[in-house]
Length: 339
View 1 (cartoon, rainbow, N blue to C red):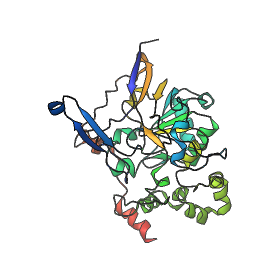
View 2: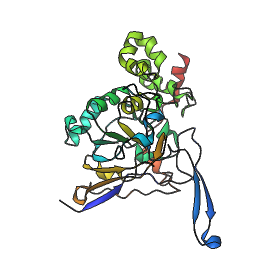
View 3: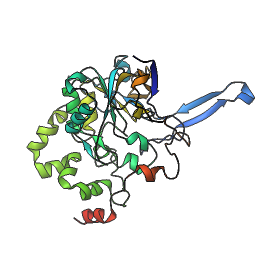
View 4: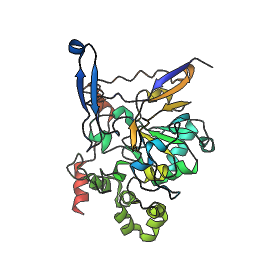
């Protein structure tokens, strides 16, 4: 057993931190300065779902699967987001939907059986945390989870899932796509909506996973009810953030935008610490996430994460070129748009 050390798994916070497409920019104002008042005091105003943060059930649903009103932050156990953990390294392609087979494969490489996950915190390292920035690559084209992954977490009775992505769901399951009252169906790099870009790249059937009415059109109402009906029964729009709702509705909380030195603990077991504010009637909270691990268990050769430009994730002008894959081709998007 080596010396216990702490590894920071949190993106640094600042007024310039990347944030979800329609979130407000954090407002930070100095109330006192050292020169004038002899102390430094700052005011901060922002959406709590900024940077590395926790979600509470009430954030996305009115009722949980037990039929009771969805819980606020203050109603979750103090250790809801903390416990014995494992970091699963997920091997998926750009914009890909994470499925149970990807999670099973990651468990094998982490030398842990799915049956051992009961009561544990599961951290997902998809590599997206390395691209954390105010960019289409991080928000529009992220890989992500859906209802199948959500059911897998429920089946294996995990305690909490912390993901290094923009949300607990694939971007097309969110309002960035064609879901929810706040739906945006954002334009992609080609100038066409990201829904059309996805169809062009993966096909209409693959896209239907993210769109209730497309799923029903292609597969029929019965197939939709079989896959998403349990969410619909508790008053949820099935394809709108289904992993969020499947997890949170069963008491499995989530952490979004996990980052920092996550690569140091990939495929490792450790103690995960994450505490939201004790916020009465809160829907979620920014939090500091850290891993406590034996020093000799840390992955060797992984450099400390360096954040420049006030925590935006930008390293240098060549960073995105080296780390991001090419955006969907314009020709493919045009082809889909003509259909």
